[in-house]
Amino acid sequence: MSDEQPAITLYRLQACPYCERVVRTLDEQGLAYQSRFVEPMHSDRNVVKRVSGKRSVPAIVDDNTGVTMSESANIVEYLEHTYGEGA
Image 1 (cartoon, rainbow, N blue to C red):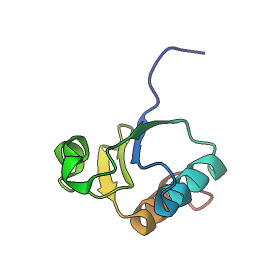
Image 2 (image 1 turned 30 degrees about the vertical axis):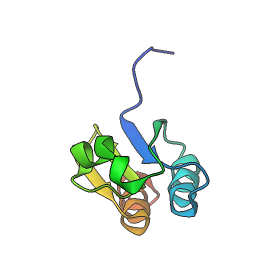
Image 3 (image 1 turned 180 degrees about the horizontal axis):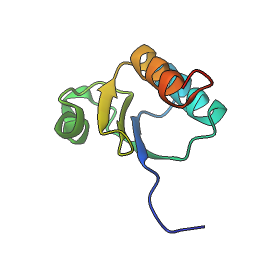
Image 4 (image 1 turned 90 degrees about the horizontal axis):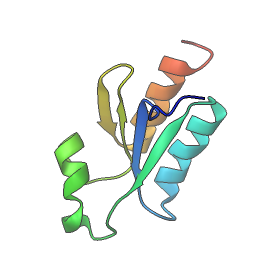
């Protein structure tokens, strides 16, 4: 095992169903990722805005591909297309 950070970072909220959908997909694909929990107050989510240009979660940054995106449906589709059986 290396001490390297996983290539995928997921910005998420506690108990967010959209975030959990992405977590399920990451787990199903067997992908290593790090979770960054963000501020519950939308206006306080500056870390997400700096990364993705929006304050919405979930958002992912994939250092493998250089992709940054938000919106759970888009993320799930991206993960399945990039890492899933159809990849």
